Length: 349
Ligand code: MRU
Image (cartoon, rainbow, N blue to C red; front, side, top):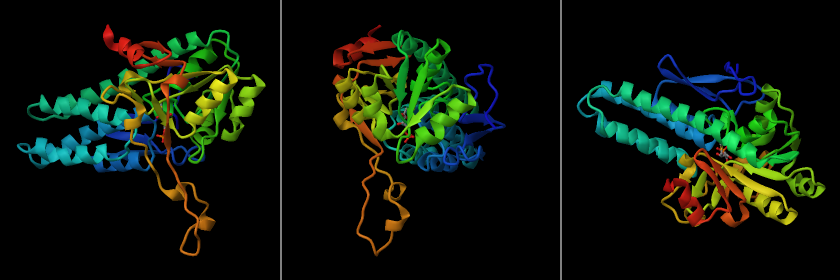
């Protein structure tokens, strides 16, 4: 059951820390069934991220932070004198769960800092850090929602890709948070791409919007250019898994093609992401590792097995060059026409 929340247009939560364990809404099973699994060890959390029970860059980072709390509890009880060295293997396994979303590494770095500064039983201080990462993400999303909705003034329709909502974050969502805020201000038409092959749009985004009674229209990914040509949308709004220092943006496969199509049709292109998604260590998107997932997520089962000669290429992210992005919306402000200089200004003050 989706958790209760005072805002009736934001009722879904992917992650909850209760009774000393992490509850994870299994997104592989949505929308057919709504099941929370309970994790009381870091190996389980690592597997939940790798298998995409929890997915979406900010949610991956938050889950990993709670995973560190569980790892520290176990390692401290195993050996109070050596737990800081024992936990390194757990941190490495969490870091290897998915390669592209930088929020994972960002969250693990924050938890490493707390580990370094902790003496005695670490659980309370690490839990406080994980809860802060979770709450800060929700607050950042609400702020981005308002900033992004400001840019949509006068627009009647938007198109989004993948799932960037409460399911993918600490709550409210990044791109879907902007759409949530714009809906509250009267935005009329929300189009959601199906998002093949994993169907984050068809299974997750429309489920989440349905839960919150926000009307939306699902389209096949291949209908996006035709939708833009019809004039029904003025903005494409997406999230990000990693943004390079020059604004190049890695996001769900298909995002790049949407950006090319948007520029061709005079439709604006917005990326909404918290600053925890910006990887200042890489100058451009060329350095971003693109996750390749199992061919069988794509390949029809008919073609599996030794009797067949068909392979599948399944990169699950792509990189959109900053030149195709009109605005990057973060909780610290909006970067219009992103490049290395305008991005730097975001953190200059
Ligand atoms: O493979 P996924 O479902 O984890 O990919 C998610 C996306 O690409 C999202 O657009 C991105 O993480 C931003 S979520 C707020």
